[in-house]
Image (tube, rainbow, N blue to C red; front, side, top):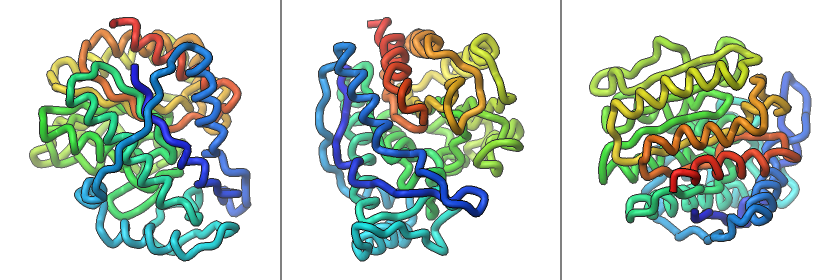
Length: 318
C-alpha cells in the first residue's frame, strides 16, 4: 500500500486555538503526523511517496476563488510568529492562519489528489496522509482545523471517472464535504459521527439531512450518542457499508478520523484501539478501489498504532 506524505505540514504550527473565550494548546499539531509515520515505518508500511503538484484549479473548482485568494494573500503577509484569526471566511476560533498555512493546506490537497490519481489508475488501496485535515472546510470558510476540503476535492476529481462514495468515520460530522455534494447524485456522502446537537459542528449531520434536488437520497447521516461502544458502532458501520454497496460506486473514499478512540481528548466515543483493525476489514469487504484520507485523531501517543491497525485491516483483503 502506498502512503502519500510530505513534511511541508510541519510548517503549519499554530500556537493556540480559542475555546470558550480562552487560549488553549492547539490540538491539531504536527506531532500527530509524526506519530503516524513512525508507527507506519515500524510496521513495514515502507512505500511512502511524495505528492505530485496539481493545479490550484482543482481547489477553486469547489472553493470560492475569493476565499482561496484570501488564504493565500493573508498568510503571505504574516510573519513567522503571528497567529491570525480572520474576521470573515471563518466559522470558528479553532482555525487560525499562520505564515505557512496556505502552503501546508495546498500540499494536503496535492497529497489527496495524488492518492486519487493512483486509485483512478488502478491501485487498490492508497493512504493520503493529509494535514491539515479538510472535511469541515466549506465553499468559502475554514473551520475545525480545516482550510481546503481535501476529501471533497479528491472526490470531485474522481467523479469524472465514475461514481464515488465517501464514508466519513471522523467523530465530528463533515459539514463541508456534505454541503459540496448535497445537490449531486454522482458522489454519495455517508457519515457516522457524534450527535451534532451535543458536539461540533452543531449545525449539520442530523438524520433528516438527505440531500436535495438531484442529490436527494445521496446523503446519509448516522449520528450516534456519546460513549458509543465497539459493538454499537459496528452495527451502524454495517448499515453504512450496505448503503454504499447498494449505490455501486466505482471508487470509495474514506474520510478517516480517529478521534472516535476512547482516549481521544476531543472525542467522546468509546472505541478501543484494536477495533480499528475490524473497521478496516469490514470496509475491505466492499472490494472497491479505496482512497483513505486522514482527517482527525488527537491522542498522539496512540494515533499511529490506531492508523496501523486500520490499514492492516483494510489491507487484509489483498
